[in-house]
Length: 377
Image (cartoon, rainbow, N blue to C red; front, side, top):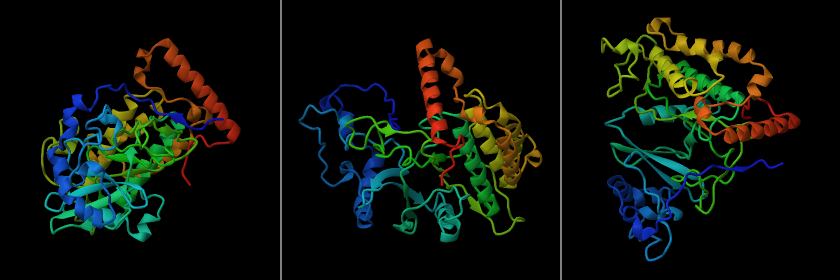
């Protein structure tokens, strides 16, 4: 029985390099990364040929499409991160950190990567593959495995979703247990992709293989359980004691992300209830409002997003409440397909096809004795 499938790819232009001149020009953020290339290479980090000295586009003078060339896909306008690989061919992400803008990020990430904390299963803070690189007094680089957005590919069963929630709750509770406030309004959660993508994928064309010659092969979370990680600790704070635990509101948030406690006042407050609010808000906006069958989580999410911070449960309380919710879910419920609310807009044949595929997968899972809640070893 086949385990691997192809990731659906979007339609692609057939224009050749001569019709895509923007691919031949490095953006300003890319030019900045070129300046760091010698330093990164000295620390076993190889950037794509696009960022090497004297780069000449590999498609120039040919009929190749830049999108089919490793040096073709440009980075976005965001400077903070770039893809790279180690000499052992491991794919990684290099993050630029300015201590002036984010004075605590390196120390917090380094703290959670200490040997004793790293081996704790409840530690879902982003792992490092190298020690932090301190380029200058103000500039450091954090090198982590290449990760993937937590819901790409989408969860195929409610059980897969339940495992993600369980890891997310325990991960934030782990931070709070160690007196660290995450303080990220958008809850930047990522997934370890290697179990699902045995051959990995191109870092910028994530639906395609590393060499861009075919679609990336993938399997399901139920077949190959994976781990989820919190990333982006730029606003995080580590406190010495509970009594000193206060923080001002985050700047630049949209009205939808602004927690109730800061809508009338900017007075510093305990950031832990705000963390609870942010996580609850993310679950409601990104998952509960978009999928059928997640009503079992609505009451808990409602508690997490209470207007009054004092009325919200602690993350320890959230973990305990979710344990009871999880235990009450039947195996048929956990194995059921997670369906997007907008799927009704799809054609009848598409919906039937997905149902049939899910039925065959479910039979396979039962025959192989796979747990409906896929927890990684």
